[in-house]
Length: 203
Image 1 (spheres, rainbow, N blue to C red):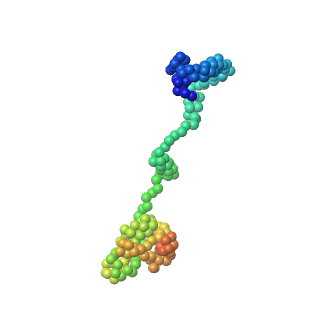
Image 2: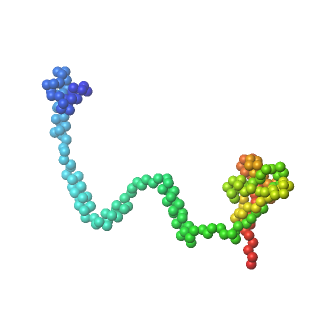
Image 3: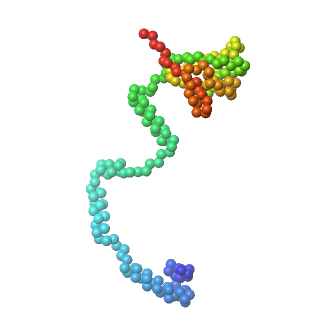
């Protein structure tokens, strides 16, 4: 459609301002729009108006309690950030644990067991032990007080089954050759395994 004809239909130009070659097409548009205006009704059908009136009347008749109940049950979209979701899950877990008789008791000294580690490593400058009892951090240093190459040390742990290795001079990881059990570490080597039994109770 040419812009002059569009301007005429939008009421921006009069018929006299149209170029002569567009006036016939403008007449056809005028007739079409006149037909549309006479055939399209702007009133809603009678049955629709009655349905709306009945619905509004029923809504007014509902009690305030019923409206509040319907409002509460209406589905809604609730957006929760991941941090808020994690906090809610942690709070729920804490509530469940505390609901079963309070928080878990901290391990007492009566459940602690000391295990003795020993490794012959002549010439080593330092020896540490790392395992799943300390998240594999070689922070537990062994000592060789008399300089004979036998490094020893004690570690306090709770009863359980633990895997461990020795770390020599901060970089060389070595499996305990005197361990009673071993487990594949998943990297082509073996971890030593120690089983720590609960301390004996005196009767």
